[in-house]
Image (cartoon, rainbow, N blue to C red; front, side, top):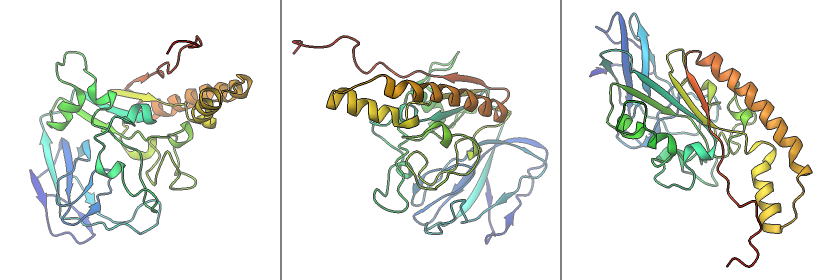
Length: 280
């Protein structure tokens, strides 16, 4: 573990880490604050948080800043130290989870603190990354332990990053800053493709997306199953557009992670095709 000390907002250059290295990056905090890296890590007090596994060439450099892309300047950010942990080589599996609530694990509980806080406040985040999400429960080929457990135990064979967000639409995954910041589906987080999680080293991308486009999911549940007035014509065009936009999104993911297998998961069937009259 290489602790970096002596920084005061300037560029930090760790010594003795020359050459081609695979490293875990860990910023540490000494006050309650959000550690901002290329992705959003844990929000807590006095704890180590993992930013992921990255390829470093030459002498690694880290710039510490409390400036975030949304520019609100209303977060208390405090850095205590940054450390690199060298790995023996590239992890065999470099996995990224993207998408909406079906990926993040909305409703499954056990959410990471930074992804479920501040409701009603300007820094509200309800992306809700659950420890019980299906990506974390997935078993990779040749593995008897889930992705989530391997990640939690800092396995050198697996790197796992989850940038999914409850309520996300395809437009909130594509490159470019959200417009506006703070809407449901991004909550002041960078676009999922711009999060830094994807790279040519990524081996697997798993996602669900499209159901929130055009507010189809919310409107269908409300109108068809609560109010009971449902016309398929109200949704067909929006669904077709969501399919088209998802195709473009997958192209964007492939550009950012050209060597990855991309797995687009479907949505579960929530209700029966048959009416349930008399089946109480």
